[in-house]
Amino acid sequence: MGDWARAGFWVAIAALLLAAVPSPGGRVTSEPRHAIVHPHEPFVAPIKKAQGRRLTRRADELLRRGDLNGAATDLRRALRWDKGNANAYAARAQVRLLRGDNLGALGDADYAVTLAPKSALAFYTRGLINARMGFWSHASADYRIAAELDPQFRQGLADYGLGWALMAQGRYKDAVVSYTRAIALTSLPAPSYFQRSRAYEKLGDIEAAISDMNAVIRSIPQYPEAYHRRAHLFMRKRVHGAALSDLSAALANDPSDRFASEDIVHLCGSQISGEQCRLRLDPAIPPAAEHPQHFEFAH
Image (cartoon, rainbow, N blue to C red; front, top):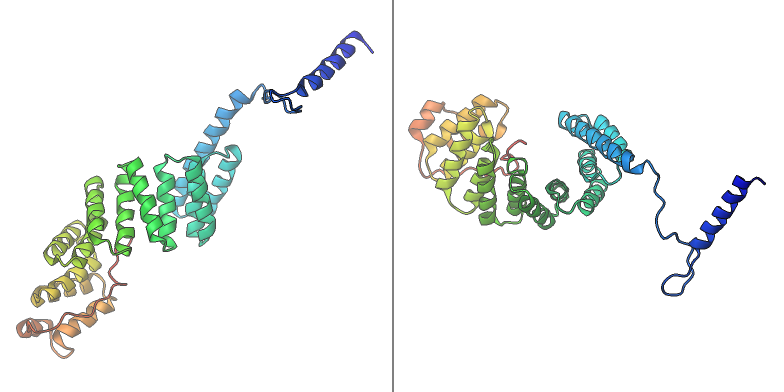
């Protein structure tokens, strides 16, 4: 055995002996005092994280386009590069939710929150999943934390989600507050006005509900649901002429709206024209039946 070989042998033996020195408590341990780090790891780790972030951003774009398979592939690759990528877990949770895998989605969202407890995206995503599963109190808690962590999150989207969760729990006053914050933060306030109108109606403030629906119609003048909802509000106030005009507008924008047709028949009967109906409208006509499943803002 040459000199260099003998030297290497004794260095290896010394390393083994040092690894088994007694610990401060007297127990012999074979654990190294310092983890062995690959000499290139400090340089490779940032590259891995950057690649993971790039793939996550691309997956987010594919998700917005509706390409779930492409998004899932990129997220799988992103997590191979960086297993601590909380945004990738949050995005994969949304993919799984859209595929109907609620439990898998919830698991990914939980892990995203664990990895990034200060991430508004992680809490918002978990709130979205809890809402889909009908866990409204958990959803409202997650949305609230997301809004507190980032009050500007996606132009008030956390506050909008919180409004939904509060409405589902019958907390209409709190929902009004959440939708008001969302309206102040977004450049597209029509959905929040629509839902706040519903909250005001539940509170019995019909004037405020009509005012908010007016804002929706100004923003989206071709949206039939807004006309139909405002027609119901007018019927509650016994302003049947205005209600008939709105029902006609709803049908003009969506001829397949059978609920609007039924409400016109309720107001006028089936045998007379719209103009004759306006002349014969009686304030004693009772309000039309509610269609709660029909009055949702498409989102």
